[in-house]
Image 1: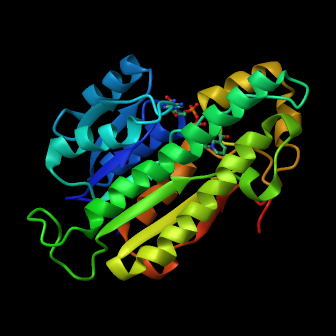
Image 2: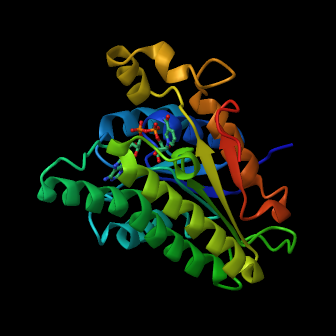
Length: 263
Ligand SMILES: NC(=O)c1ccc[n+]([C@@H]2O[C@H](COP(=O)([O-])OP(=O)(O)OC[C@H]3O[C@@H](n4cnc5c(N)ncnc54)[C@H](O)[C@@H]3O)[C@@H](O)[C@H]2O)c1
């Protein structure tokens, strides 16, 4: 039922974790994927080789840099001359305490908001402008099809809050929810759909490393399902949303947290 043949999809932070699972799942559903990566060129190359250069195109950009998103978009567009779906997955998490010196605290807040929220907004801006353009030769002519879809990866922390050392992370992800809802409301007239996904713990390499340090049982104790989600759990939701099969769901957030915080 989910057939993404003909769609070109940009996935940020696609070289590892949820992003890598998403790239592979979208490819399996028939899409051609632009895999954005920050630093891990080796991992990105590995995936591109697996999928083949006709199906997967690599673009590098450091989203911690203020001007990065427009240039990333320009390079991504050069591949197929169109983008149908954007998955804003790249994100960072680094602890900072109110007891840190002000410069450290401020730097952590600025960087987290830049990567997790401002770069997301900047890419959404590029995407909306592109989706609004009429009569693009390569765009689907079917009026039932959306002119474009934006899928933003937020977090359970946006709703539940996070520990004191991760207030900036939670705040950035809360911003992603408001941004997504505003886009859904503001640009529905242009046939643009926007969604957020709010995972709880997802068992990526990063979280697996954390589990080596922290008590794994403690990390999962408040999840009624008793374990973390897999990256594929998120990737499958992305594939469904990218299909455009249910346009009236626009603006919604899909929780993926094993019923640990359903709102
Ligand atoms: N894993 C979880 O438990 C979990 C839970 C809730 C939300 N999320 C969100 O899901 C998304 C993916 O998380 P993940 O667990 O796969 O993390 P991850 O650390 O494995 O991957 C994050 C990706 O973002 C990229 N990235 C980070 N900073 C960047 C920068 N400055 N410039 C360019 N790229 C940058 C990384 O290169 C990487 O590819 C993130 O937005 C994260 O906040 C993850």
